[in-house]
Image 1: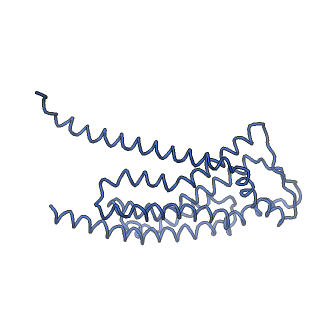
Image 2: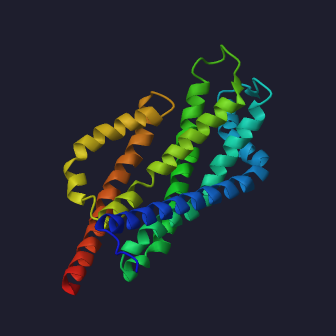
Image 3: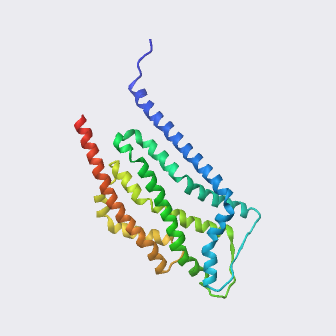
Length: 261
């Protein structure tokens, strides 16, 4: 006859199961990312041309000629991989978000699990809007400013690896920052974050946003700093609002659970 499991073993088993589930979800997310990167890699040439558009427009505005150069024989391949990784993230983001949702879904009520589709959709759209903001609003102001900083004194010879790396960094960071309202709702829904805490610390948020905008912004002028700071502050207050909505859902869930007990 088998001996009953000890309390320590009973506690350890769920933890091991959760860790295995987390490992499985992370591997699936990475797999989707790799598949998306493979798809993006096949379109690396048109994607590179699309990412080069802000530089071409800046050259026209400054009436200069800009040459993208390579500094070593591996730079074109590494640059193509960077583009593929970024494109793969954009393609696979809904699947990655789904893996996150699937990991926490067992702890939710059935009516809360129905929020999976809206959550995934909004998360994907938020990242897309953030990258579009960087590409269509931030970069058209920043790139001409940087390119024409010394006027026609110099002829730009820009490394394609560094240029693409900087562009993708700005787009990725802005895409992730635009996930702030989604994350705020998610944390409030779990009872981890409160809208009151966010509202009461708005002054700290302003300082943090301006400092973050200064790090993100490729220039130090007031115009570009404002272009980044204002949308981030709006996102912060949107996060406060959606966190309040998440709190209400959390309270209703807790009340339902208390009634059931």
